[in-house]
Length: 362
Ligand code: TTP
Ligand code: MG
Image (cartoon, rainbow, N blue to C red; front, side, top):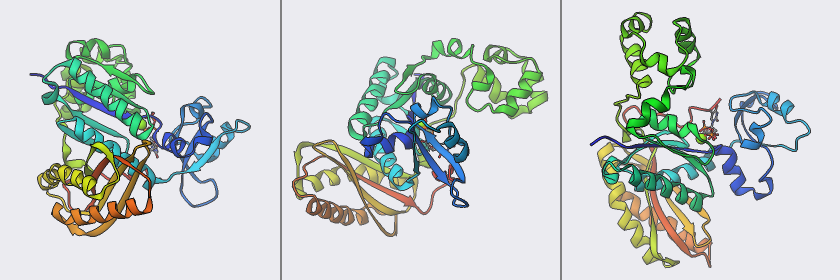
């Protein structure tokens, strides 16, 4: 049985996250800035919403340049609030971990999911899972995402980028080569401007050309490893597995049988979810420092409460902390009724090759 892999990417993530908590800015161009702190406008654009992209504003652009493009356009410039985006990201990743056999976080707003087992190799089932993820993320976080479904990570990624925002693109194994053939090589995931320029010198511009190019010649130019990689992706081949080890958090979120504000009932659900989280922590061999509860109330507003503790690899140590966080939440929010509850541990002290989610920091 072949694999079925999904890639989920949140749409204009930081900007959309700001629109969620500031309804008054919805409909305006929104630019989220990562300030370097040197002078007033030094730093780069983290992201721009799609309205602001229409003005030519892009991720990575100097803030001063973005301000010029936005002059007279009623645009909103906001500083990035990473802690807030990470809370949302953790809750989304928890949804994903409920919907997949394995999840590999790629960045704060992007993850690969292996759904081969649970879809039993059925593309219809896999598409159903993708739709359910989109619905759940929209309902719980009021955010849209784009999902690509494919026979491997590379095709899933290309499919996710194909239609954005709010896209869902399924590329079956038999359609993969045809799907890829008209892409310019510069648009292939993993091919940067330097590689594209070298390929152009060889007369290769389309993926179709790369797919059928003489591999011996390709190896002379790029070396064995890189040439094999390029040849394979152009042919829609990518054997790399979805690897859980790079997760920045392990969590599970679940829906209560009935909405409730009763500590015992809600904590009972946390206990139920905790065995899955414990299993992941043990399997990954990590120690965590932060325990969080994720609450979605009956009006579908999402909340996170966290506490830092001594590093531990034992989930049992997280349970009284989660109970305390829940008790405090209920006390601080009288009248709020809980619909969904989650448990997350994060802030790991030992992982193998963990990628930092702060990699975008300027
Ligand atoms: P992306 O997924 O690359 O971009 P995006 O979610 O904003 O837009 P798209 O709809 O095209 O997916 O990156 C995720 C977040 O990472 C983004 O919202 C902000 C942050 N980021 C930076 O801070 N700097 C950068 O240069 C990039 C590319 C992203
Ligand atoms: Mg994104």
